[in-house]
Amino acid sequence: MKNKTSQLSLFGFFTLTASMLMSADEYPAFAQSGLLAVLYLILAGVFWFLPVALCSAEMATIEGNKEGGVFTWVKKSLGTRWGFLAVFFQWLQITVNFITMIYFIIGSLAYVLNFPALNSNLLFKWVAFLIIYWTMTFLQLGGVKKTDRLVTISFVVGIILPSIILLIMGILYMIQTGSVRFNVNLTDNFHVLKTNFSIGTIVPYILAFTGIEASASYINDLDHPNRNYPLCMLVLVVFAILVDSLGGLSVAAVVPLGHLTLNQGVIQAVAQMFQVTLPTMQWGVRIIGLLMAFGMIGEISSWIIGPVKSLFVTAEDDILPHYFMRVNHDDVPVRLIIVQGVVVTLISGFLTVILGGNNDAYQMAMALTVMLYIVTYILIFIAYLHETNSSAKRGFRIPGGKLMRFVVAFLGLVSSIAVLGSTFIPTATIKSIKPALYTTLMISFFLVIIGLTELLYEFGIRHQKQRHYNFTIRHRHSNEINKVILPQGRNEHILKHIERDIDQEEEKLVRDVKKG
Figure 1 (spheres, rainbow, N blue to C red):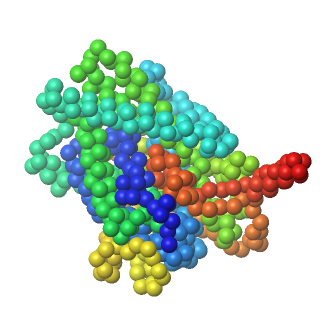
Figure 2: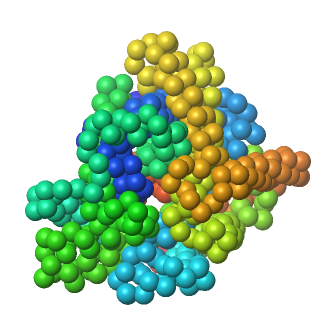
């Protein structure tokens, strides 16, 4: 029986996931589609997000699945190899996601400092990228407790506040000018949809909905989950569609598509809005740009350690090389954090210096992120379909019976496979990278990552087992979550340095003896 004090109400559970609604850095990508962005958000929400949310929730409540997260869900159904692939790709996507996040910071700072070269000069941009990323990384090596307050403050003043200002200013702009920069004619939009639509267009919208599996694992704390969880997800998807639509359309309303820069689109929109509605307060744009940069820096600092810790659930199978499965006295997996940094450095260097760090590189980074993450979701759906015939006890079932459960999972699986395939094909908005080169690069990257994952797994299972580690691990409780962190960047597991705890116990024993 669940402890009543640990149970979450419908609203309490909603707040665990509501932070994913605030994604201002993705608004320029939505703005590229104009009015059609609303339709794409609906498609992504209904045909992909809801199946992911419902299947993840049921997987999380199956007996024996409550502590391990994605690795355990997939491992128990499909085997250890596939469980490792799922959690490895879940972690790896964040290394690419950092690139778009830091590009956003660089774009804001370039405007605030009136230093366009920071965003246009390839070497300057990559150096700035490395300074921001590695500074945040080294600050995190002393433990996340030191930056928890920073994350909370930065979320409020750097993400929520600028998003609200953007929406309000957008409304004022449209009232004052009576016009928008995107085509509002439904017939014209339908023609564009009919002639130019591709699954790849959905990629930014899928990215906006990722991470729900991290919150789904806390359904075990939800009061009346069979009623409240589906209701919560329906409310969430409606709010997400509403907020993201308004954000994307606010940018599209004031910035012509030909002038839209994906990592500066929000600040471009705010600047135009101020110029039209509050020209005497144009200085306020720089403050908002500074706040947005601060908000994203706080978000990045919270993402650096959390996803890495998810890899430590593989310790029971001794898959990753033992050298990397260590934590320091601040409970930080330093060696894996450095590996993560090297991966981020290499990929960012390729996208920034080789591919130009422009809109096309930004879109390729989004496609790479989705490509990696969608593999995890495909494995979740396959594992779920495998579990539909299982007699294992579970605390939540998708409503509607066995047929409905199959339909939901099959819909999610098919849409995920379609999105994965689309990431290898450039959209019409990518201009500077030839289609053949784009596809070759994406396929090569995918094959290299698959190969690396297989090599790691084979090395792990063939290597002599060394099950002595200097940490303990457990799944986080719902009341320990920092709710302002987006779900895909959360720390789902808590690592504790064993030797430190032993030292503390010994010190306590010595003090007690002296007192006695």
